[in-house]
Length: 99
Image (cartoon, rainbow, N blue to C red):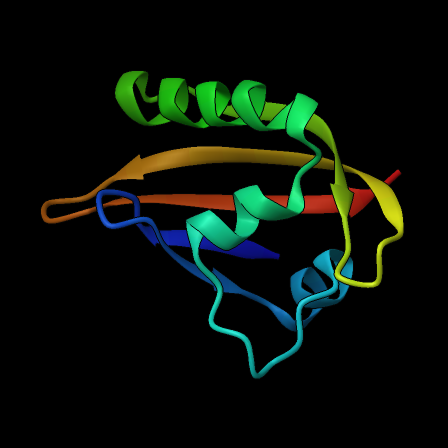
């Protein structure tokens, strides 16, 4: 569904399905800051912590969080991912589903 292509720079790549899930159009450049801004404030710190732990310790993550689409509607999403360490970058693949 989506990935952080370069975790050190927090560049994101989202599939069409991820964009639909988060309510983000094709014309919008996705970023880590945009991702965080879509989360409800109660879930933001917990999500940041889980992702930071995954990057720093090579752990996988399995999160549920609520997000606010640009339309104002709130949805629950479950995201699971793992970090892969390459020679020049860190990558995380993540799949997410509404629940």
